[in-house]
Figure 1 (tube, helix red, strand yellow):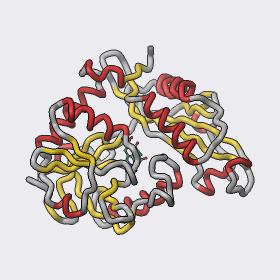
Figure 2: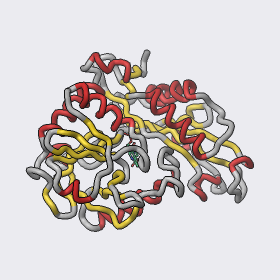
Figure 3: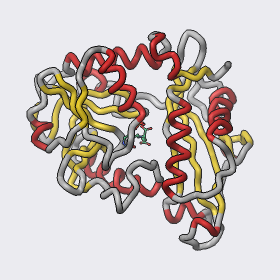
Figure 4: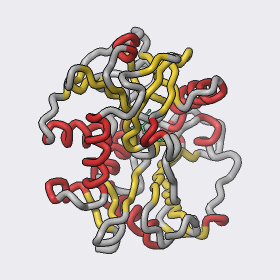
Length: 307
Ligand code: PPE
């Protein structure tokens, strides 16, 4: 395995990463006008496999539509093939893939119709997002002093680069306070999501998670809901309040980068036993088997890079 990033796919070609540079006047840089994806590729007995590539490409195109791009230079299928090519070119056996569609107009311009969309895709090795230790011991989180986006202020179903200023405010504050990650409430004061993960709690054996009205429709979230139901758990999408979190038996978060991480402390309150709970552990194990191609029921979620 290598963690190098030798090649970036930029506007249809694989270029050496140090040559994949952009002009300072690229509008996306000034106004946060891009849409992106985060995708993981895992080692399997059949070689590297990208997890839910089609769903990530669909969300990427949806994000572009939500932001307002009218003409995209590539289709979802072409971008999916490009993701595979980037993994192969960098000889990565497991990695994180980052496609980005960004706005270029070379002028100071807030009108998407006066410029064009460009696309880049990078891939690199990315270890445990909230730290290796958190996967077992659990993460410590706080309720952020920043509110998550109102769905008519920023578009919460889209991974728009500019949306992430909100996440950066919350994450930086949280880490400076000594926590691992921030939990954000929606404008009504109900639990929304973390800065880069969806959130779940377990209470009396039932799994609860906020509905997607004000959060990103996480692909890991969707996978976990499916896998949990197949394991016989009931999963309920509902409004959760801050104190629901405090009295949960278990809490965990999910995301492509983070995968499945227990949360054992929130706002200096111990959650459940203060250790990774049995439901969280069962889902971590099931997820691990799914992404590494060890569970044939979910074989359709894997795209083999070398096929
Ligand atoms: N909410 C937010 C705000 C979010 O950014 C992510 C992914 C999720 C939920 C989970 O979605 P999914 O990956 O489809 O299960 N966060 C990405 C970016 C992380 C980063 O720091 O960059 C990711 O995990 O790839």
